[in-house]
Amino acid sequence: MKKEGKFPMDISDDVKIESLIHDLLIKLGEDPKREGLVRTPKRVEASLRHLTKGYKQDIEKVLNGAIFEENYDEMVVLKEIDLFSLCEHHLLPFYGKAHVAYLPEGKIIGLSKIPRVVDVYARRLQVQERLTCQIADCLMEHLKPKGVAVVIEAFHLCMAMRGVEKKDSYCVTSSMLGLFRSDERSRAEFLSLIGKK
Image 1: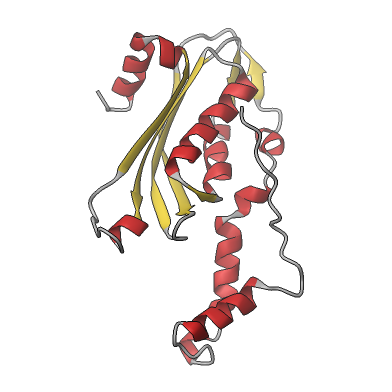
Image 2: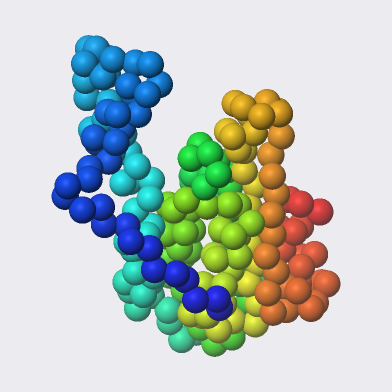
């Protein structure tokens, strides 16, 4: 798994996101003292901190010892995991569903941990391609399964609201590791189970 970079996410007390948003409103031609905007900088700061909280989450703590020895070797699939992230190019949301599968090799993971892993990486500034690979790499590294498969389908507001303005287009990305890459039957079974074949 590629090492993640460390990010200087703690903004010093003398530079608050709130004050930056206040200045941004002025630059956009608005009056931040207007009734509807008075609390907007504070709200935006709280929102951005929530939407990027994945930077401050430790994957080891998220998994929290929820990997168990188990003699089970059939495919485990979680479908339709809700996903919300921010495009790093325009800071606009993209959202959709993640489908995740793994082929155990003597270990299973608590099912609630898979959506938590998705959230850790989604709650960062992202591109969908990287997000897909980060989820797959994380599960491959910590579970050591025979294979991991991740498919993400997402709508990108940067494409729907601006640019080409294609509101019904969505992006599909996949990462197939281990047997899902080398064994066509495993890959086909996964795709069939998530309704993609």
